[in-house]
Image 1 (spheres, one colour):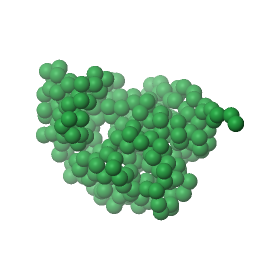
Image 2 (image 1 turned 120 degrees about the horizontal axis):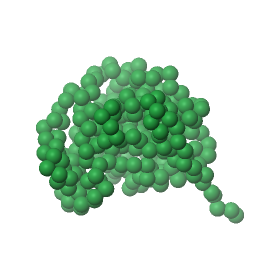
Image 3 (image 1 turned 30 degrees about the vertical axis):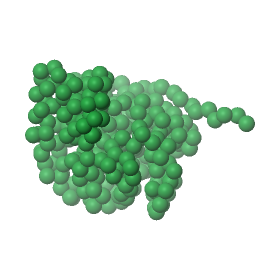
Image 4 (image 1 turned 90 degrees about the vertical axis):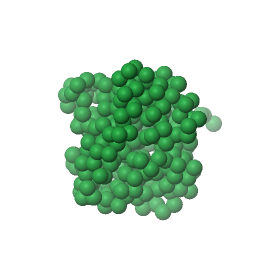
Length: 275
């Protein structure tokens, strides 16, 4: 018996403003785009794509980041996603995590004609009441301005990510995560400025799976996901027991199974058992 070999290819497409967007393509089958969140990169989704790639062709987007220039905006990220869809040349499903889920959501809102067959949104950070995280950002901003990225990262991990004190101290020593703080601040501020009501996303009729870890922080991961579950007309909410905001890192086979099962049948009634 021959071992299954995944087809892994690095590609480039061009966004509307001429920016080159790198993509890693893994596997064969119906197309699925995976969009990573803030303080993250495509490497965190490779284990999921490696499992999912046995049944789907996965396109991992190397996102432009909020520290790539003064003209950065959420709209530019939406343009990038549209360019990836154009590069694929046919319909695809979209998986977005955290800020990546926000990008996918706004792509569906801004460009309803995009050939997206289904969306899987893992805890997009939306604040229904408008700007409310400014006070939480203050200590992160202050620490960043004095160059103490470890302290800024620790504040973020405690206040936003909901990590335990011990884990927050451990993770705040990660120099790569520290380097992501400037981009993260702009992304959080951009998400916080978005204004939406219960009616904002009612026009999105794409079948949508909302993933929510039962250990995720209430603000804003849990609150926004639960609100969207009531807003999106074709949404299904699935809780992930014993998981928080990073289930794709901690249990990629489980997350891949949820994605595959949902895409095979959006009306499936027992997604939590898919493992």
